[in-house]
Image (cartoon, rainbow, N blue to C red):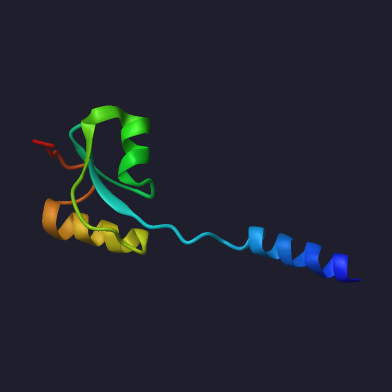
Length: 80
């Protein structure tokens, strides 16, 4: 019984949804919102990606920031 309970707790902990952070990037000259952090973006996209804003706890928050301050996703941008 104890082993079954422990196995259930481990499974429940790993099955719980992960809370992601979102970031606004200039990615190859276009504004994008992504859940990868800056290091992961550099690995995936190379040096053509730079972070343009703070960390957001929701995708919609990051998209609102991108729209209000930068013109929205897909607009042109520069990392310079």
